[in-house]
Every structure is written in C-alpha cells, then in structure tokens.
Amino acid sequence: MKNKIKPDTLINQKYSSLLLIIFIFVPLSVFTFGSISKIWNSVTHDKTNFPLTGKHRTVSCSECHKKGILAGTPSECETCHLYKKNDDVHSFQLGVHCGECHTPTDWKIIRPGSWSHVIETGYPLEGQHRMSNCIQCHEDNIYSRVNSSCYNCHMDDYKRAKEPDHILIGYSTDCDNCHNNTFNWSGALLDHDKFWRLRGPHSGHDCSVCHQNGYNITSDCINCHRDDYARAKDPDHIKSGFSTDCSSCHLEGSFSWSQAKFDHGFPIYSGKHQSFLCSDCHQSTNYYEFFCISCHEHNKTEMDREHSGVNGYQYESINCYFCHPDGN
Image: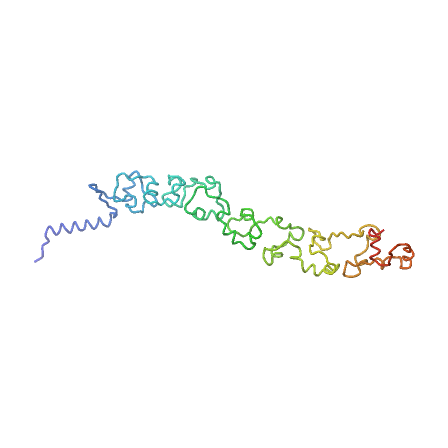
C-alpha cells in the first residue's frame, strides 16, 4: 500500500521550491525599511532621481543609505564624499561640485574639457609632470597657493646633482634654464659661454673630450693642454717660460697652434727683419736668448770702428738690443 502525501506537506514543498527560485533569480539587495517592503536593485534604483552609474552601481546600499534610511538621502556628490565618506582629497579647495570634473566611473577619469591645469593654475603639465600623481607636487593635499618654481619640488634633485655639481658651480635653481626635456634630467641644454666660450675647434668637440674626469673643472687652458704645452719645442715653452694661459698668444678661435698672436717687442713684421724665421735670431730652444751679431752682415772689426766713441759699447747681442730696440 502506497504512502499518501499529506496536503500540508505538499504545500510546504511548493513554498520551499518558490523560495528557492526567488533566492536564485532575485538580487540579494532586498531591504525592508520600516513598514515599506520593496525589492531594491540597480534596475529599480534607476527609476529614482538618482540613477546608478559607474562605481555607484556596484557599491553596497549601506554605503549611501546609512542605517538603512532611504528618505531624504541627498544626491549631491559632496554630501557623501566629503561629509559622510570624507574621501575628497581636495578638501573642497577646488570647488564643491565633484561632478563638474569627475565622472562616476573613476576619480581619475576627468570629463573632457572640464578642467585645465594650465588655465586654472598657469602651470602647464608637460612630460613627466603630466604622468605624475597630484600628491607628488601637492603634498598634504594642498592645492591652493602652491609655489610653482622648479626648486620648490626639485630641491633634493638639485642638491644631489654631482655631474656637474650644481651647487659648486652655482647653477641656477630654475631647472628650465637648461632642462627642456621634461621626461628626464639628461639632454640638458647649457649656455656654455656663461662658463667658457666655445670657439674654433672647441665648438665641435664632444663634451667628454674636455670633461674626461667630470664636469667640475676649471676653465684654465693648461687643464686640457698641459701635454701640448710640454711638447711645444719651436719655441720651447717650458725653457722659455711662456705663460700657461694659451690664449695670451694663441687665437681663441684658431684651428692651429701656429695661429698665434705675440707681442714680440722687437719689430719683426716690418723693415729688414720681417722675413726672418724665428730660428734666425733664436738659435737655441730658449727664446729668451737671441743673436744679433751672428746674422748681421757687419763683422766685429767694422762694428768696433763704428762704435769707437760709444760709451759702454760691447760686441754682444744684448747690447745691440739695448741701444737699438726698434731695429734702427
């Protein structure tokens, strides 16, 4: 004999099946507020004066409806994001209407044309500045009256710079003077004339030719040309005691050491001596020594006769120069 199902058992099974279907197909965001019972989800909420878009569509109801209170919930952004959630990083310094710039999708997604850093602040965001987080320049979330000078943010970078040493050399703290590449510090443009004029062959060299040991060097010629000075034998610069300031003789923009200017003192650019070679008179490597009597056509006997009445006369080159400094 088959067991008979009691009517109340059958009803319980039907209700159980119905409840199972409800839990499967109806969203769990079902709230009962006081005497009002209604199924709330993103679809039903869209019929209110505040459709759920972007991030609002995925947040829990209690995020906006504290303690389950529906009535009187404000729809202004600032009411929730400043007074309730306190997550306005600007602290109202840029205004009170979040929606004028931000979209519900993400705080970092700004409405096109809604806000311009250059228009609002006068400071264009270029290169790396455009990619930086706001907080890197606006510490402590201070957005008003921020000093826009380079040094205000990059003081530590300036102090750390050692090639060249910015502090030692006295570089300007206005980074824009040299660094026009706003993505990195390399590739700076430098007005070298402020330190040493690049003329002639110097203008075509790579920086490393002079700055082999770094950028903190003096502008003295001998700093780079010590070997050239030591090798010079016609005349011998060391024995002659020539100045190590190359520019005192050699033209700054010349491409050859032979292009030199030299105040000889004795006229060699005109008159009888203009066609002579240096070695005609300077017969040793010491150019402080010179010889007049060895190359002149007159001999000692003739010179002695001509100077017989000259007080202090001696047949020596140095005496010739003392009496005839202009060659006459």
